Amino acid sequence: MTVPPSSSLGTGYAEVIGDPIAQSKSPIIHGFWLDRLGLPGRYEHCLVKLPELAGYLSKRRADPDWRGCNVTMPHKLGIIPLLDRLDPLAERIGAVNTVVREADGSLTGHNTDAPGFLEPLAKDLAKTHLFRMARVLGTGGAARAIVAALAQEHFVIVLAGRNPEKARAMLDELAPGTDHHAIDLAHFGDPTDFAFDNREGCIDLIVNASPLGMTGQPPLAFDFSHAPPGSIVYDIVTSPLDTRFLQDARSAGFRTVDGLSMLIGQADIAFTRFFGEKPPREDDAELRELILK
Image (spheres, rainbow, N blue to C red):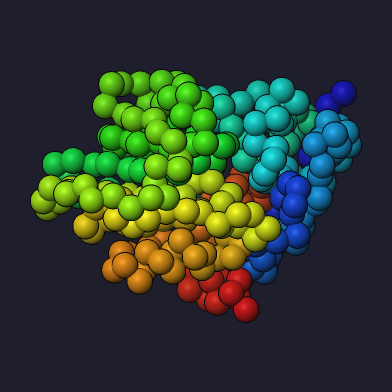
């Protein structure tokens, strides 16, 4: 049965789902934008455990006021069979972080993690480089989006996971080619005396795409002797925002990008799909202050 939409795209509500979910910053971000734009919608968080996911979606797709949801751990892969369709990027990545309820009640899965991840790197990626290399730590749903995004930007990728065979399979699927490498995550925990070449004209990224270092998770073991000079160190973890990984990177003299940058970037795309208007990004500095209170 087709469910009629609410009278205005700006009304209704969206939410973020996951387990755990109380730590999510998404309600603050979307709520800030709704307030600034004077829209009557709302955005909340909802704890959904794995056995409850199908029932949650069944109930929400029948609610004409529900615009959709953002999806976080552990549902980015498991939610796919429960949706009616995937947009091309989400299909290629094989992970969904945004679900949009269409006017007929059907559900479309999107992946805004990939463009959200690249957004804070836009100025760097606009430059011409002789060589681009990224060391990506983790092989979960977020890592899939990041690997796909980096491959599109012509990076040579070293993907590290607890299971190197899984990492190799991910590279073969998302970044075909012989230049990429899959290794054991433990490799980066021990010091190295590797002599890096002159990095002028190159861009190097070190990306924590795993939950390691997140509140309630073990720390990420990474020795910065593995980071070439001038590397950009990027951690997608948002709780805590300033992880030990980022603190150690700054102490070692590296430029850092925190998980809030990616979170705001991907939320921009989701917000537009949920509420029909672009968020006021000129207020990003104030939004960050609000989140960090």
